[in-house]
Length: 129
Image (cartoon, rainbow, N blue to C red):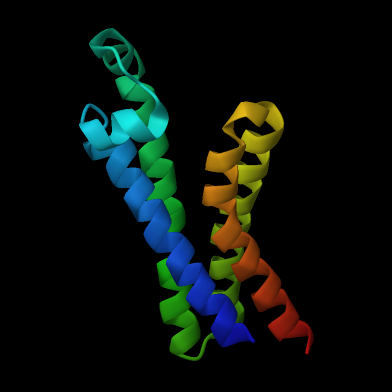
C-alpha cells in the first residue's frame, strides 16, 4: 500500500509543479486567466507578486514530495516517508483551508487536495498494515 501512496504522492507533486507554472511563470497567460478567473490586466498586475510567491510554495511542497519518494526508494523509509507525508499533508491542509475559507472555490480545493488525500491515506494505511 505504501507504493500506492507514493504513486499518488508523485501525481500530487506533478500537479503542484503545474500549479507553480501557472502561478509563477504563466500568470498573465490565457490558461492561468481561465483557471483562476482573472480577466483584467489591472487584476493580473495587482496580484502578480502574490501569485508568484504562492506558486513557489507549491513548487517547494512538490520538491519535498519528490525528495521523499527518492529517499524512500533508496531504502531510508523513515526519512523518505516523513518527507512524503509532510509534503502531501501540507498540500491537503492547504486545500482544506481553501475549501473552508472560500466555499465558492470548492472545485479548486478538491482538485488541489484529492491526490494528496489519497497519498496520505494510502501511505498511512501502508504503515499500519
